[in-house]
Image (tube, rainbow, N blue to C red; front, side):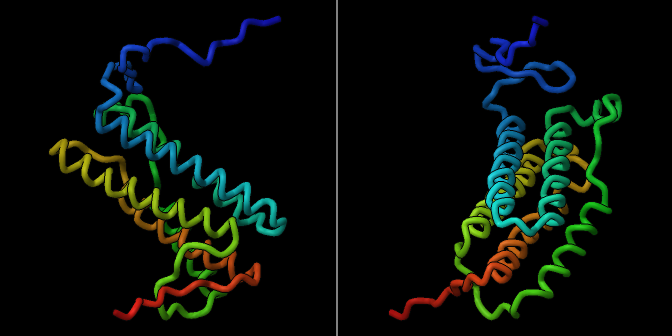
Length: 195
């Protein structure tokens, strides 16, 4: 039997981890927190995709979600690397075309949804509800990205990352509405309580 590499390395047992270039940093570092949340978002997308897959008729949307997951891995790898070394390691960057695709997909999906006249409460089908979790986690990642850039001063955030995350959370919202509509699930509108 061939030797398998072990999943555990024990190198992080003292509370440190390595960046792409080999630099050791504390696991409490804001950068680690940020790309940990990118990983969390990716996992939530996986859950949403599994719910959508059970519905049996959203192949194009599932393919796009896989592309998005890959882009989030690209983003995470860039966040796990010092800006000066990203070129050296030839890390893939988020391209404007990926943002354009999100916008194009939103326009197509939104055209199938009724006009929005109120805020929508998260819910409906399990797939749609899970996409709202993706939306809110994505917003958290976006906030942390901006906060990280502010905290670190002149640190260069990955190319097109802020725009991509901003658009991505909108995409999850539109996709959640689209699936509810296609599955015949009523949207629950927010009705402010009167005092």
